[in-house]
View 1 (tube, chains in turn purple, cyan):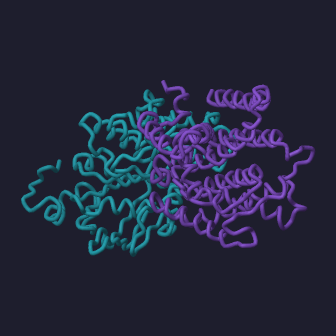
View 2: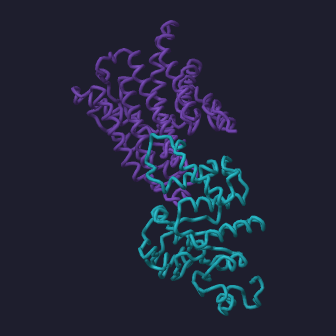
Length: 313
Length: 255
């Protein structure tokens, strides 16, 4: 039942996503294909954070570290080892590097909870931020441009529409996997830990290991999102690791719906569309964002995705 | 093998200058219901914390079935066969009642590092959970969200969670705390039904309950065990009367 509903939503989303470039072409608005690619990549990043925060109750303010690391792996390979810049090598490598970083950071920071966990994840991310600022070989704080996008056999990745479809396929696959994970044994344990960690310990769950696994999975997906964003912008900079980005991602999932499978996508879409629309009127568009966030927090604590969820009988 | 299931030797715990448990040596026999009584602040919950592995003792050791488990964490001990119910209800409030218990069943039925297969298709987890809910009399509320239950029902769920991990040893910390007389009576017969098949360490305030359920009783005063024995022996013990019931105790409050 649960799974059927999830599949129906996923199929509807993918159908809409597949049709979008054609609709945009008909409307003469091809610019928006690239814009939506950006939304989908942010959605991927936000969904990975939602696994941590929404499902596992681990509020990380350093998630952008894994996003930026993934991006830098693609950038550095493009510069130093262009023969490996195929997506089939560079992207898995980006994910592996982010996974390893998440493992190391997670082992330390998951020994803390609450505010301390927020602070320590923030500290690690800022440390990495300054590492990349100081790497003059890779542009320092100016960042670095990519000569070209990662290649995929048989696809012209330089074409924005082709790239869009690749992003869409990866987001669809990740959402499917995250949905399965949420309904699995592991997902149920993770939700249990969020609810009452001491009780889960006393039932026999080694909660640290479950949290660490979730942290690594989330970091890995964030690394993929970073690799995609590097390709989307053909540019990588330390700002991708800055805590601004972590904060933005957190705002997205609060807007979209904490713990909801669609929260990341809904939040990323609303956030970026608002930004796109409101910046036409004012530079201070975040004032409006703040008001909307207040409204969501007080009137729809389940976020935008929660408005569509069926109420339990 | 050994007749003792749980043994502590010289268990000690300090919180700053306060000695919460002071060289506590207990010997719990397999299959017995062993009550720990004592006035407020005697260190009963601290003792349960050390037995369950949540609190590390400053000195002394805990033996389970002859094996030293002093350095085992709470979840390791749970896997060895410890189960605990909390004095202050500790359940998964956002889960349904049946999912609470199913999660406890899941803890002892294979690895939970399974990421793909939908857990709600594992019908045997839910079936075992329902069986246990039936035992504690909550089967009619299986689909309710746990936090919406009444206090007494929370206490029953607390016991169900402890039962669901198929424990050898149950540490029950005031299972009847805050219950009305009818609910208490139910809980009492529930626990009486577990006697024999489970080894129980029962921390309880209600003397009536303790004397009806316990095979043996240990009296904890100011962190020390001052006496251990059958209900008869404890009632007759002058030191217990003095320290625990006060000088003027003439058996009042004691059945």
